[in-house]
Amino acid sequence: MTAFYLKFLITPTLMLAISLAARRWGTQIGGLLSGLPVTSALVMLFLSLEQGPGFALQAVPGALAGLAAVQATYLFYYLVTRRVSAFIGCITGVAVYAATAFVMSRLGMVAVSVGVTLLLLTLIIILTSNNAQAGAAKVVPLPRWVIPMRMLTATLLLVAITASAQWLGPVASGLLAPIPVIAWPLAVFAHVQGGHQELGAIVRGNAIGAVGVLGFYLAVKSSIEPLGTVPSITGAVVLAVLATFVLARMLGKG
Image (cartoon, rainbow, N blue to C red; front, side, top):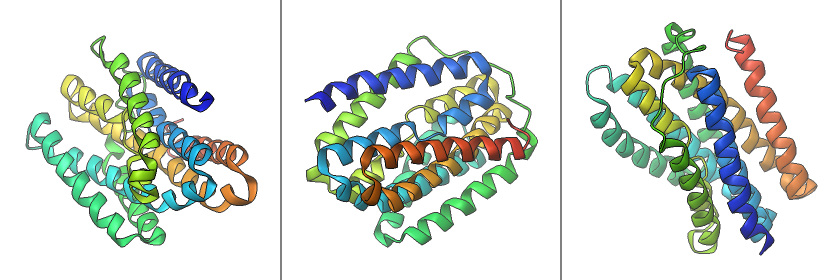
């Protein structure tokens, strides 16, 4: 019962903090922070607490497949919206996500998911290199309802995944964990209000953050059973944050 109430306390608080940081420091930092394993870490934490570390371990391949699908969607949206509207990009992007997630989950191979994700992240970072300074300090104004929407969506997503975990199974639960409830609305609003260059800054920041997410899942995979839930996930989050900001500094984005 304590875990149930923690979901309604921790999740919206983290969503609010990241959203306010993005509003304060601009789209580049917003993309970077939105790429961190916030929702992912919470899903894995509560899956492990409620279903056991073994269940969370089995969810990692699905989560890695989902991460690859998310990055494929960002890359597709970034490329296709050079020629079509944001609305068409969103609709077709959902189809790309579903198709990629299905294929990657059917393959069910961690090495393939990691390889595909790294390839996609590399392509995104290269293709958005011209957007490196576009959103460094620029703040794209968002409607007032966006932040409450993120808080509500993230909380409902977490509750839905963890409540139905036994029915969904570990692979499907993991597949839903990386859904970008912060980054996707931020990217679309940045695109609509700031143009394609601002979209590139968000997508680039998110790709850098996704390197940390990848490290997070691999760290959980290797440590959750020997170390236990809280030490494993805490250490994996620390690793993700360090990896993200080291890479951001190396790429001149810190």
